[in-house]
Image 1: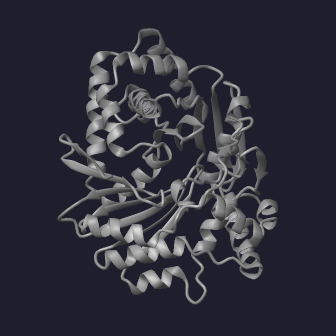
Image 2: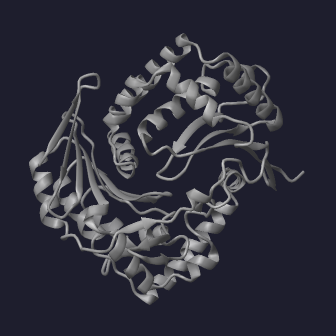
Length: 424
């Protein structure tokens, strides 16, 4: 049965329906927009390489989800990219810690492109020859990222914050893990995770909704009954404090780069409320327009590269501040002082109301972009939620909620500093 959510503040509708195969559909109609986009999201990311299948413990090599993403684009006769180009569409994909997603954008031919998307995601082509060929390409990609200061700084921060979490492993894996992947492993992995009940189709744009449902119903294969999958993330062994308070790396870079992180505990009794409180909290303390933000700019400690974010996956959460600065330690010192000030005095009701209005307004802007809608809903699918749920949590969030988040999250010992600086 189809469910339709209407949000009067946003002026938007969200249609959801689970089809006979078990696949979940999220459709956001956007009449009057030229662009249309569809995505297939799979509840399988880089962190899902260790799990229990019923009572059996299974483990694939790190990087297998990313490897799978690469291989699905290889058709038997011509590449998937070429097929979408002939249809007048752009196609892409990504793998993160919790999801793999494949999506296309077009202004015409939406139905044919949707059929093509569903076809290639459900028809893998794995041979030992093409798998071995792909290994060199992915290892080259891994080495390229190692030379990227932004990526190195981020990976070093995660490794400093976490002891046992799979987020410390590169999404693409390592040279050793990639070389150990076989065609049989990919077939096995695909059969377990690319199963309709663990997948979703997300569409946004101006199209016939019933036609979209009909295409998905017809072109998605029936579900396969398998034992229950229990992901093994090691979160129960993860201590509250960080593994290392500071880490420094050197490379060819003009100005020092820093990432400051605060490890959080993922709250899955109410994950969307946790996400809303975390985003609002760090924006209030260090976001654009905050006292700290103005102070950093006034003292030439930050530039336009400076940003803050709160990230929450299905098993991890953290706050991060990032940017270039000639004195990262001073930035870190000022941040900690600002947090202590808020911890002592609390957050004012005026600041809280202002930030709530800012974040609800920002979420409204998401619905002005077809791409932003689909990408955001891909993330919410893994959280068993939707975009409207975040707006609801912002609206229901109280000052006490955010003060409690401050006291529980931004604490000494849960923070780490990663710096990448020049070799000179």
